[in-house]
Image (cartoon, rainbow, N blue to C red):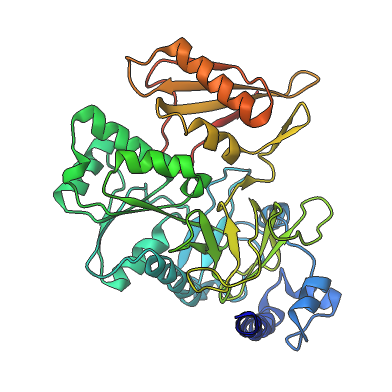
Length: 429
């Protein structure tokens, strides 16, 4: 098995190198953003190895791309071809800064559809499925590529843009939807609305909830909370970005593990501070090179996503592709240090979601004093919950998990927002 593992890793890396050479050839010929960088460090399409690429090619930072679009409005210079080759427009959701525009050629769009095809295959989505897309269909990439890929797969695709949560639930039940695509937060919200309106999700047909946009899909307690509200469904995680397209798929065998689609991406996991590769099992920042999005590529892009790489060995599902244990753990700019303890949003959510009496929560990060302080607001799942008792329980759970006293207050139901796309539970004051 060990020899086979080495052989398969070698096959993956040889294919990556071949795709990288083709990509570099195209960029050197026409990409005004990357051609000067490649020439400066002496990289050509004859690059000898992936190690050479990682050694000489500098990282791409989001701030560079934002500045490039400011200097070359509206789309920047990271375009490999003339504008007449591009047919798709997207815009980042601006969760961590200024929104960026992103253009794609038909070929680059097709590459993303192929990646989504792997996501659907891992989730056992077939042409017999009816897929409901519960998102706004705005300019962010979101599930646009998923919609096109599912239609190509032969699924009945039902858009849920511009609908209330109740209208979406009624459409899901009326159309016999079998697959729901949304964020983890919105899956919880739909289940909450169904309970409030007396809709029995047990009589529905949803068997798979494919989530993305935030870490919850690989957090055990959050997955369990979703599956309690949707008793016939299993949650499958996935992640991607507007800048990269779909990146990973949920492992069919190992719960709470994502696999990076390495035929499409050259992936690295680095220490955010010293930029060295982290060891298996350690937390680091995911760095990606898009091997097939030639029209608007990224070379060694620092995504800001924090991950824990699995050991370099074949997975129980048979894949030799990079595994991310616990999925996306959070973002490097989201981590806070409270009295010497590193806290990640995903770790806090895992503790809070273990309490079934919590419907929603929000974390207030106060940096105004000498030390950073946290406070948690939580909504009870129903009016009959004893608020003071729930506060004490959550404070005890948090103290046990992090050795910190984090004050908790219970707020009235309906106080905290339930966005349909990415949640913004961490508020800085």
